[in-house]
Image (cartoon, rainbow, N blue to C red; front, side):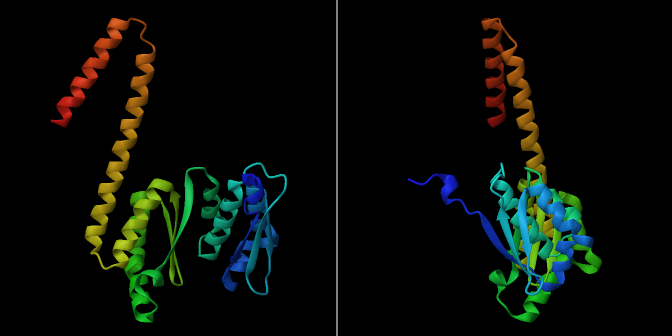
Length: 225
């Protein structure tokens, strides 16, 4: 039987638009070098056709770094600056690519309309989404890309798909606001729960512990009524 290491992909091929190859390489190769340092992967760039081979080095400790390296290369190809792309290396950050034509087809006028709806007048829609969620957006060619925390990125993806399908901007903004509020509330509940567990763990009197648990359950039952 093969181990996971034996069957794991050790390289990815990413095709960049020719105009983005220079951005990936950077001044005197600085961006490419930085990506290799961050991920421990090797980037083999073909400047003639835009193909980039992302190779996992034998001594790499974290296999996830290969996927991170691939996504960072893709993100640069989709219009992001290296400064924003480096954030993908964070454990709680990711990259997502939406192909507009997969949703609405290839009609040029429809593609242009979608791009305009997502960007907004003078970039207003894109800026509103970025500022209200903390993610980064890039509309490049027939794609819309997102860099951000995973949970926020999923909210923005759903919001963008709503825009692509014709939902009004006000409705989409309301959706984002509601989902971000729910996300914040859920995080607060997790913190409160963690604090409560620490408090309970510090109580040695079993009668007192039983009383506190009973009171918590009573409060939860009242909330659900």
